[in-house]
Figure 1 (cartoon, each protein chain N blue to C red):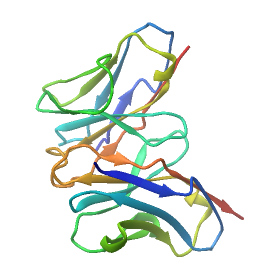
Figure 2: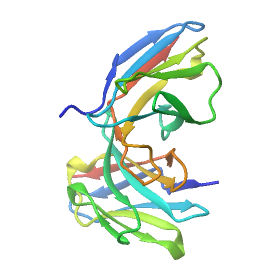
Figure 3: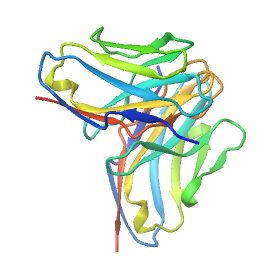
Figure 4: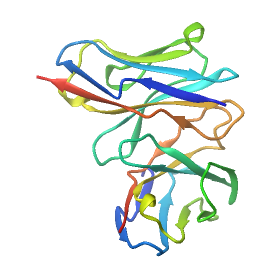
Length: 113
Length: 115
């Protein structure tokens, strides 16, 4: 069975600091991986997705994630946090042969002035 | 180009009642998936519709049912509502399922409160 674990339900960083949100997955086959962002009272917006084309994936708003098969990780990073990055972030996994996405429990990112 | 739309935005029901939520997919998309997001949790997959058929289902009881229309829009029906059904219900659309990793685009959700 596939699953996603997001380490840290809440991460707080200072404005301008590095953002690192951790995600580990388990899948018996090479997966598709996604990061979504959810702002308060809104739906989910895709930040980036990994589909085996390249291990380093660049997304919107300056975010990127690196697929590391040996570590079964897909951590999300951004070099310099902005106040507008404050939101809930979800990592998700999809097996190539399945048709449903499995989401992690989410990480709430807070930005300190 | 309109994205995924959902109606209504908010809904209040009482236990035992029935509710219908609606979703219009992104233009050109033929697949609709429904998710339940309880407060403070990640979305949980309910089911997916493609070509007007339920193609896959998550771990939800039969009280949850759906329908897809020829124009690809979809409805989610929940019967005999329980307090625990209170959640944000998200609709997502994609093209020809997810076997190729196609992106799911999410609507803003319908927030259901069961009293």
